[in-house]
Image 1 (cartoon, rainbow, N blue to C red):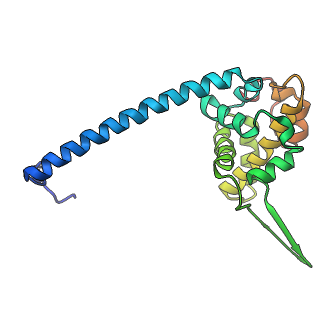
Image 2 (cartoon, rainbow, N blue to C red):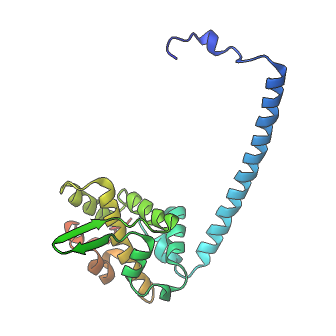
Image 3 (cartoon, helix red, strand yellow):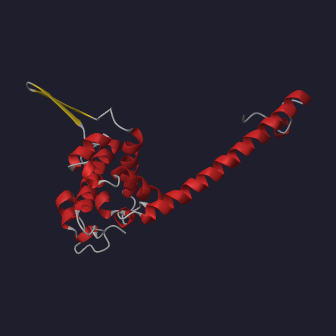
Amino acid sequence: MKNVSPSLLRQALTNDPALVESSIITLQALTLGLRAVHTAIARFDREIARTFIQHPDASLFAALPGSGTVYSARLLAAFGSRRERFESAEALLNFCGIAPVLKRSGQTTIVHRRYARPLLLHQSFIEYANESIRHSLWARAFYQMHKSAQKSHWVIIRALAYKWIRILFRCGRSAPLTTNFATSNHFKKAAPPYSNTLPNPTPKLFE
């Protein structure tokens, strides 16, 4: 493209009326379709926001660092409204595919990621863990510690998602819900020793 003159680029590819007119009609039809999709997305966003704010667990997920309007709703939906659905954090970790698969045979041990998993659920936790590095001092310390140990990016992100699920599961089981992660015993139990690498006290740890 570097050798193509500007005048040549401005020339029409074709002047054939049949091709030009049919292309115009196609473009107009696509534009109408895109407008309808845009309207539907806006309606979905409003309904998701309305439903989220009415949920009793909304404050927990809204308090997560960097969760915003997107991840807070996705993570709440991932945990669901029935807390008894998963008896333990490990049950949720296995279901969503964050927990690795461990295979042992004699003297051999193989660890690999879980391939059978609900993709959107798995993706929600992975994407949030990746985003949390930008907003959470603890998550950043976790990432840097493992990065210095020569771990690859996505291996660390999966491990971080694993930690976030354990933290959220513990906080979600408390009554009332715990939103002050920095001083929460649930956080301290689920996230050692990385919390020890942060300044003390840490009242704004997850802002």
